[in-house]
Image (cartoon, rainbow, N blue to C red; front, side, top):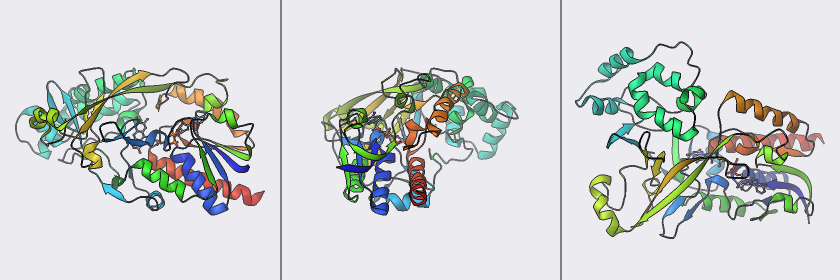
Length: 385
Ligand SMILES: Cc1cc2nc3c(=O)[nH]c(=O)nc-3n(C[C@H](O)[C@H](O)[C@H](O)COP(=O)(O)OP(=O)(O)OC[C@H]3O[C@@H](n4cnc5c(N)ncnc54)[C@H](O)[C@@H]3O)c2cc1C
């Protein structure tokens, strides 16, 4: 069989493009992924204890884009979620992101927004143009809060001082003087009601002329499957056999632990909820331990299940060929990527899409938005041909 498109990667990028190409242009697509499942990094699954877990770290869907929401809502209904985060340090849980409640915990008495603002005015370090992640935080909340909640976490995550990282890394986290402790800023915050993997299955079911081949590297099939164009959503340095060097990434190791209702009884006082291990969806560990966070995703999925699973997340060095999670946000790595971007620009029959091929950390909604844009580019290219 001949395919119009050979699509490498069955993540958000690959599946959205396959659906659009098949339904809008009548194109045939073969989607190849070397993993054993659909959904790329956003995949979820039921573990051996019957708990729905996010396979590659927690994925909190959120968006301000009506286009993305309308598109995905064709394949899923949604469960609204208030993604709640706490921070644990010095033997206690702290309200996080930093807000008036956190300040009250620090000073050990009730306070007001005015008092907190006046305090910040006193402790913040005036920096006109914060150039890195340390400067962006100390210029807003000073050294004490920075050292309690940001410095150690960022250092563990990136194995670099926040002073060496782009300001955008820490600027992602909101800082507020009121009592709003929402972790994310976007208007729409929800999870696919039946999970991500179910949503990906529905995208596929709605896509005629799309075939999927799992557990296969595209290089194994590239020369035997006849196709007109390639859409590549894997790592760009790997695509070019690392000829301009290995791009820097951070990796992660996930360590799950499951509990039965009997085991959870002793945690009830801490978690405040029967059937849960910790008091919130995510608890950050900025200073103690080697892991950065513990996630108990049952808080967000709303699954009615008496067992629970928590996942400890350990930052890890990336080795070539391993799991590449986060591009390292520094000037140096952007320069390294631009060498590949230059080569890629001259490719004739290949489109590059997604987080790995464009070497960018993008949230799921941004990835969907970019895939919808790329689809329009491909449509225009076809009309021009
Ligand atoms: C730990 C973590 C947490 C995250 N949390 C959030 C969150 O809370 N909210 C949010 O919006 N976003 C989050 N993201 C980002 C989200 O994962 C991405 O936006 C999204 O998954 C990117 O989709 P993609 O299709 O571009 O890439 P991927 O999902 O990585 O898919 C690429 C696929 O290509 C396959 N592939 C690569 N090379 C080959 C090859 N040679 N042959 C065959 N197959 C190949 C891979 O196996 C992979 O399945 C998180 C990311 C990480 C790393």
